[in-house]
Length: 348
Image (cartoon, rainbow, N blue to C red):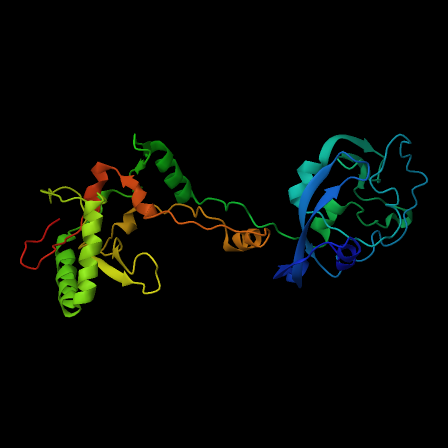
């Protein structure tokens, strides 16, 4: 939408600088956008639409007046723009996201080398090209076609196209997830390659643990927080002791370490488990797992939505990722070593 039209309609503008590229990668800087209701002047059609505000969209269209006396436009047809044949300023460019919403059944061919009349939700529009004397082509007069001919404003996608691996990962989830009686979800790990490829992981996990234990002994305060975190993990049932593990079957021991966040209001210290640690065959657990698609919206879309309303609410699901259970058959791939006292034996 042009700045002049937005001003004349007294629309409320929302500041949001963004660069838009069009034909030949020519960039245009847009400083604001607005949300308003698009309505047919004949009534009946209404749609809330977001517009980016630009100084201008393109030159007058068509570039010269069209001679339509011989076009034989049916008299009973109401044109969305009865002055389409006169050069006029383009005030508004509708994106492809509205195309199928506007199109309706009904089309009238005006003849060879002439445009067609297309029925839409806002009445009939003239679309296509025509040829006059010397077969000089006239410019397209329908706004949807101008999107292809001049410049494109791309809509932020709701969801990106999935890669083959992401599709397999989603299919694996759909085939294997289970809703428990407690309401929680239970899932299986999405292996893309056989877990039998995993090498020995116990030795590196032991070395990493002993190194961690020495560092914690030098910082009693952090050690106490670490132990408290692990005790809570165990008490909540988010991990459990393993009495016996068959080392001849596929499994994986994950080293762990802590991340300290002094600014956090809930958990100052958090333990993270390293599933990217290589086993003796130079493969990690993460190497064998599929990576699913990103589920949250793009940050750009979130910011726009956040700025569109007067009030915004935020919430936190406590220990969100731990609310999803791992299938018991797959828990052997998420083993860790720990002991609360250095005099104790290492526990799995």
